Image (cartoon, rainbow over the protein chains, first blue to last red):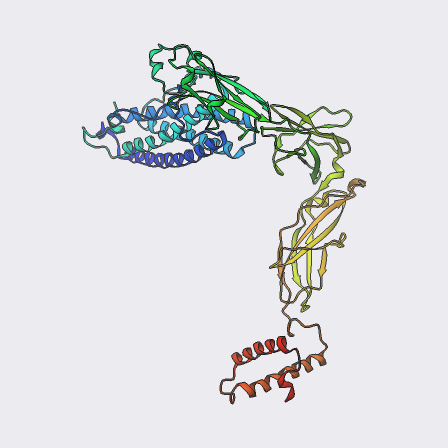
Length: 195
Length: 394
């Protein structure tokens, strides 16, 4: 319950949320730049319609305003963990295919991967504050990804970056909700009202 | 969150398929998939719609790098297979491969294939290496006469001790430009090395000639440190330059020679003094008075442990600036003797007073401004008449 939260915990939560909002905002800007560079390097059409791909978490959500704080954090965490794996794979493929030929793009990709990892850690901190257990990261490790054709890899990369840009926007909104001072029952649920 | 084969397009008919196995999720397949081709070659590619997908060959079209390919190049090879013929292919537009894509009528992407069109690598040439203070080795090379292969080309620098070494591979690339590699340690002295570069891409491998070198013959060092430039008393055409030997020089049994280059502030042209020898100071003469000069010094270590090879010049030190003293005499003239200077001054004053008498209307407005006006008038007069001025008649 909201009333159960101590003032220091509330302060810490607000601080973590506002720092998370800044992280997500920066990440969004960097991902948009990276997307431009990626589309150019891969010779893709920026407006190409790429349907949802399995394994790429979708930012689109229904009844977003009805989500609890914990739900928001857990969905964010799962998404960024997935992006961490996907970006690491993109980086490896990039190095395999082009070596250091486009070091700029590789560096930008690595920088975004770092931001995603940092943001995932930030979300774990918020969950800890709520005295929630941190969900494990798939004990046995993910199964080896299927072998994609080079064109499929390109398209998947486009899909990953597009969706990550959307997630960054969603995360800013999620953290704004979470950072709001605990309000009376019936308003948008925050962290303290999580089940 | 695990990766699965992506579904390439939002296809309503996929809803009709009940949990298709991963491998059959593609609505269509292009053949050949991700081929590598030589520039100028031709290709026939096919797009075959997967069973169960309600599309026919006439519902499909092709794009290459986003540009729609003309219908004239298509052929229906079956009810669900459309081919496209590409002739005389140019080098790939991007190293990640050209995108050959099969679309359905509404523009959805059904399948794609990356085309890698280019040339095999050429033999790398002009391998040159240098060792900074005998501690490391950096080599650079040129990618061959043509250079551009349109394909990602990987360069590997390899080296071994000439008689009994095993092949080693350099790890730190691009340290001194695009085609360079740095070997930071584990290099032996007093033994020759064989060095070569292997270039490889999707179309083949090319190996450079082997270069043989001894580390001692390719040593360079840091630029000289503590470069000081100062005036030589009141001498308006000279500056004194002093510097210290590079620190590493003290540890090794070699000599050094130096070069100085200098330029005036508003010019990009350097003047080189290359007869400095092994001294660590030098006086620059014949400079312009009252002028700012930039000075740099570099070092060439030679005869290291008796090496007979000419050393390699270090980088230039950072520029150091100093100005020559301003000249007391009228600028632009040659260096007159005292008496001549006096005569010139007297003559000029005589001209000036004559001019004042004529133009200043009783000295009511006498001042430096008037003197300036007179200088302008004098210059104009010199230009137009180039003869004795009226003031001289006084």
